[in-house]
Amino acid sequence: MLKIFLVEDESIIREGLRDSVSWEQCGYTFVGEAVDGEMALPLIRKTRPDVIITDIKMPFMDGLELSQIVTAELPSTKIVIISGYDDFEYARKAIEIGVTQYLLKPVAKAAMQKVLMELKEKIEAEREQSNYLKKFQSEYHEYEQLSRRRFFEKIFDRKLALKDAYEEAGKLGIDLKASCYNIALVYCKDGEEEIIRYFARFSEYILIKWNINVFCILIMAEADKIDSISKRCEQNIIRICEADPGNEWNFSIGRYVERLSLIADCYDEVNRIFSYRFLIPDEHVITEESIHIAKDKVRDGRDEGDDLIGKQDKSVMKIALQYIEDMYTNEDLSLNDVAGVCNMSPNYFSTLFGNEMKMTFVEYVTAKRINKAKKLLRTTTLHTGEIASQVGYKDQHYFSVVFKKSQGCTPRDYRNGNT
Image (cartoon, rainbow, N blue to C red; front, top):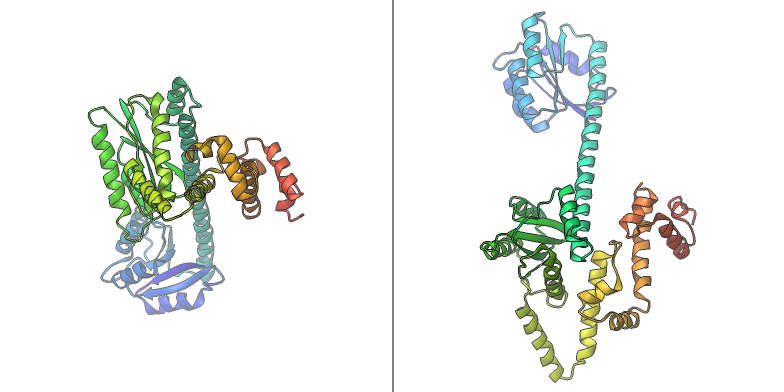
């Protein structure tokens, strides 16, 4: 229901309109009335009506003055002026202000209801368009973020030649020209919006949404400024994350490199350090030094008879499973990637994973992807190809084959409930 408010100083006319018009049948809820603009204004600010019907000639504050204030404060509110004055000048001023309709007294009930129905259709059409634009902007922003993440993933995985990296960056509107580069990784459970607001203000930082609650920050500067700009990044991350005492957060920053071609080495190093957040989550700023201290504590535990190897393997699995959780929708995720994050050889990691999870790495990742696909099939209207891409499959046909093999039906049949 749309909300409507009536302003009229003549009580007979005001009460006649209020009681004779079938507001609900026209799709409106009557939310209030007033005898002049001055009395109406605070009530309008409180009720925020979708439509205001107001007389043009009233004491203290007339309809034109009221309309001027309302259109400035509530631009989406529609205003219908009613007047006994058949005067072109009033109509001209009303149009200049942005009044939607100008009706002459006496206003017939049928004429008023016709205007209200037309306004209802107009408001609903505007809202539908507004919602569409918001959805489009949101989807475009998500697409832009995904494109950026995939671009930097290719750089960090050494899958782009330097020339191609600059060319693709140009298409994405990313300026990578700098003398030095550094990378920071931050996990922040609360404070995401503040991080975005802060780092979007500075050209020295490129903020990439890496996965859930994790940002990758590419830092770019001249050689004489890279240290200070990296330090500023760290200080502001700490400031933002510490604003909420109950916040869960971790941060690691790399050592700068002087070539874009070396940025993958910088990422590998900082990602290795950052992965220790699963072992020492209470250590907010994770560095090589904090890792060595944690390892010393584990060694001390061995003196008390703990099974060090077993504890280390369980810790490694914790890192691996979280990394897979964060990255399983990435189509290029591989056992080698996860083994590298865990600082293990692929063969040893594969054996460890199988022993702990009672399934292979591929079986585990496939199960996660298919479960995600099942959820998207039942809760969205995305095409099968889009879903395949979102859960980590380049080829829609291959995705359908894997899905049918694991679920016994095609994605379409599953969506339709034919399982």
